[in-house]
Image (tube, rainbow, N blue to C red; front, side, top):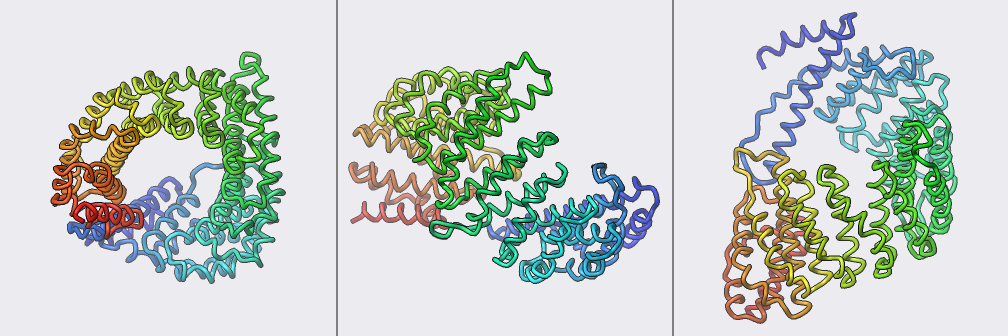
Amino acid sequence: KGFMENIYGLTSNAIKNENEDVAKQAIEFWSTISEEEIEIQEEASELEEKGAQGARENFNLMSTASKNITELLLRCLTKQLDDPDDDTWNVASSAACCLQLMAQNIGDEVVPLVLPFIQNGIRDKNWRLREAATMAFSCILDGPTKQKLVGLVQQAFGVILSHMNDQQPQVKDTAAWTVGKICEELPETIGPDILPNLMNALRKGLSESPKIAVHVCWAIHNLANEVKVMGETSALSKYFPGMVEELLKTTLRGDADQNLQHDAFEAMNVMIHNAAPDTYPIIARLVPELLGRLNKTLQIKPQSVSHAEASRISNAQAQLCGALGYAIVKNPKDSQQYMNPMMEMMIGVLNSPASEAHEEALIAISAVTRCTGQNFSNYMGVLRPFLMQHLRETQSYKICGIATGLVGDICRALEIKIAPFCNEIVEELMRNLKNQELDRSVKPRILNALGDIALAIGGHFDRYLQWVMKLLEDAASFDYSQEDRDYDTIDYLNSLRESILEAYVSILQGLHDDDKEHLFFRYLDKLVAFIHRIANDSDMEPMVIRASCSMIGDLARLLGTKHTRVREFLVNNAAFKKIIHDGLNGDEDARAQASYAAQELQNLQA
């Protein structure tokens, strides 16, 4: 800390340097300071939640230097590039990034430092000052408290919207970005008085250059995520038909690159996902249009077009599959008539060599399972080889994980009807679980899928029980030493343990449904030992507490009520009591499951 005065002097001079590379490196130094202090704050908050000690000292270096550094950064914001299409990282973009990190770091302190610059420049005749003031405004929207920002945003929103019609492309671009930030961070500022003007500006913005239109799509995405459905309608319902139409047009623009096409579809998908019931007829009419566009792409032979065109077609197929999935899930009743052609086209996509679209096709098929229920059995014959193919693609862990998730969706739809396909699916899942080369993120999904199979086929799972339970025991014994634990490994360990417990719960419930719960007894000691380890782990997260309480409650309800030894064992278990206590003091889901477990244990004592 004692050296910081000298370092401040050196970096200040460097930021003023005419050599942009030197200036950017000096700005990067202060960005790094903020990043480090933000991390220290997050660590301290997590330790405080756990009641633990050991937080690193935060010297608040950025807060100390903020006044002078802010002045330098604001000056740098006015050094924009002349070419609006030039995305080169320059001193202005570096300064914006640093200012944004500063706001996240020092919060409310940044507002009075930046506000005069915004007020003086946001209406200036010089476009550089207008753009810089608008950019500065966007940079302080994440970090300060809402109380500090709401009034400022309400005052400035009209000016920001007017900048989306500015003569200077750079001002339009930054204004669109800022509107997106407001929709994301402060949606409560968008009242009935501003919404019509906002929606009009967004619709017009979709016809701007691709760079600006991408930011407009992001703003629509954020706005649709925040607007609440009230009964049969929402504030966006009256704008839904026109906006969806404009987004579809945007995906077909001749100058639309893959980023714009992707973002336009994403914005539309979020609008559909959050749509109110009074828009369902529009969503129903959207399905055949999307199917028609997808069908056209499937008629094109990949070998007849250039590599670039084939990639564009594959990207379009992926986006169309995603949109179809959202549309049919939102309005399954009116989409039933399209299930056969949709599955036919999904198989067509899976049969194409362009693997980029396969992931979205599998996700869309998951949507079909939710819409068709047990009637999905009609498609299992044709889907099976593609499902098995992607389960075996362990080198492409993402699609392997999606295929694994699809197994669970199919099980929930078909229930017992999945039984004829289980042998090869379970065999593949167990092989993947033992595969040391498969990315670890897929392992919890495999455990969930095995649990879904157990729940679907009930007592028939006994044919796999011995091998699956051994794999669960092996997974339950996995741990990291304290030296090897970091945020990523702790997150993974909690995710793995949650999936293990959920698999145990599903297996027990499935066996109980066919009066075969006695088969679970031989594995009880290992399961209880696992719960003991969890109870003594200081890094246990709420999701694991919830799953543990669910397991304890089911053990009491399904086994304890029938067997005296198990009942006595459960009632007097100190680790169970600790986890239930932690659950009762946890989040809403944990409290619900802890209450369930406590009640079931109390019933055993009655």
